[in-house]
Image 1: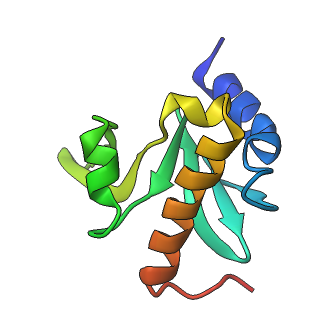
Image 2 (image 1 turned 90 degrees about the vertical axis):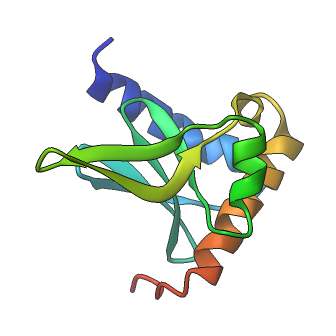
Length: 117
């Protein structure tokens, strides 16, 4: 399956995955999808993988699990964003989905970025 198709299929499954956390809205962006809750982006889907927002407070939980940070190359230089890969149990366990989504949401709120109208 092509990367775009995997990305779209994962994005379509996310409302059910995030149901224990709350309602989400998906928006296409840069070949992937931004995942929003209450107007704030707290996750993204790229290359068929889900990444959750992190910050100095939450990053340790992701690092302790060995969850890869999201990065890409721009003009030949690596760029890392404050997102890390979601743990696999999020897709099978409602409580894990709620816990990890909550961590990402709290990081998004702490980031101070404004809500999207």
